[in-house]
Image 1 (cartoon, helix red, strand yellow):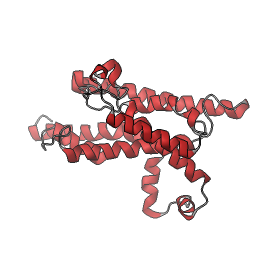
Image 2: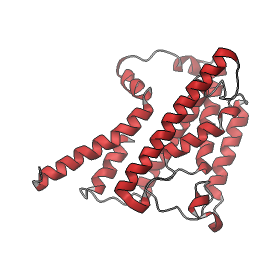
Image 3: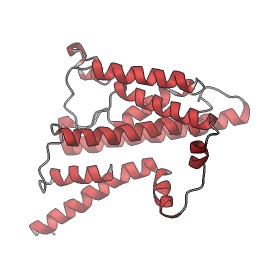
Image 4: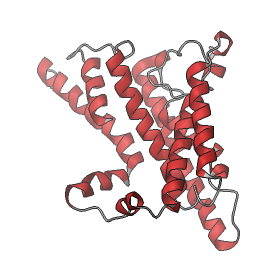
Length: 238
């Protein structure tokens, strides 16, 4: 993701020329990044207390209340960051600002999917696959309006810098939930291997993985700011 956004920024400053929205290779790279990101969102929803095994409306007593507070605190962080992304992108891109990007989608998914966390992994996987298939195959011109296109059945992508509609991406999150549920219930060698403590160089990505929202929010301003400074130095403005 960071490498992709670095390329995006270089293109923004006209230091490289890339057709991000037309070149098949770049579209495939972006799709792979989003798919991995949202698959892990599903895994996290199953494994994190209060958003997976305990749905925000479930539980009782002090433990249930604590889980609900953790859920809503995390949800507020995601929703707040999505609003910041919209505001910042409006300053940069005007009418092409990000109004339903990755974080907007994740905030909605966090509300829709926790009640399904206790369902069987097979059912989650089947539902996820059906949602992905529907999102890829069903496109209607009547859904092109921005008030409807976020659902995912629009015939044409809206004019925005980042767009992650409910269909098919909700299915990817469900597939992540299914995989995490299967892992939790498995005692096979592959499951035991995934439970081993990370050592050596693996600790660095593991540490970054514990702070995904922070990394997501900070990496692009840092990259963009650094490149903007370099551009000003090259022009003699600083």
